[in-house]
Image (cartoon, rainbow, N blue to C red; front, side):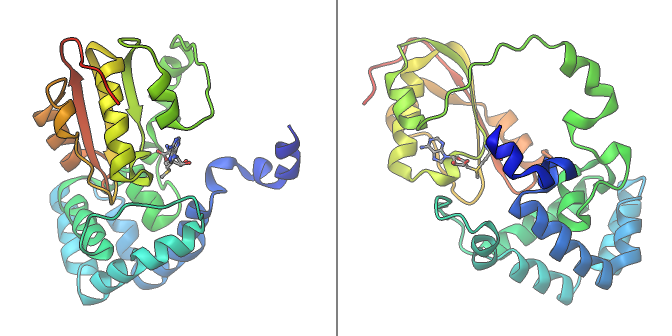
Length: 259
Ligand SMILES: C[S@@+](CC[C@H](N)C(=O)[O-])C[C@H]1O[C@@H](n2cnc3c(N)ncnc32)[C@H](O)[C@@H]1O
């Protein structure tokens, strides 16, 4: 309550747009894009077919200036400066953050319709240009399903490693680690996975996404946690969250003891 009062200006304006990251896209990236690629960007996000979009992207956007901007604009230094969070200690396994992001952006503009991708739209336009570009949770057609879904949520605020170490054997069947693993070094990640192998029920599902850290399930948990190769590969190539590698695992049998 006190926090809501302290940040009432942000609450009034809408929380979704008030994070440092979001402000960076709105106040820095989007104006630069408007200045340099105004009409081309508009056309890109209005293209109705992939063929049309590829022509716009290749002829009017992709080039030395675009590649330099993406490479340098999304470098490790800029990301750290923008986020400005001493707690955000990301493990970086890619050779160059800028090159990695450029490769993902290029793949997405060449293979997925921009007008349907809220992540792309927000990154380059700082807004959602059409109703169809909104994130899933804001799409009109998903409203009823979200409203009527049975939700029984118990919120626990704490350290994930400590939480999972204390959880009883076979007590959970779904794990969604949304970009948490990027901030956890390999040792901690291995501990989490060993414990998920113990805590997970047979047939349970685990989903985690890697940004710049490319953590894989440690050897000792692999006899229990099986990577869904097809789903993990297709999500990594095709999910709207185009900068992530998305890993999906299935819990098999009854797990061994974990550290
Ligand atoms: C990159 S943010 C992702 C935020 C959000 N889950 C998402 O998908 O956008 C990483 C989050 O992981 C949290 N985190 C890092 N280490 C953690 C730990 N050991 N236990 C619980 N949360 C942790 C950080 O506080 C931060 O909120």
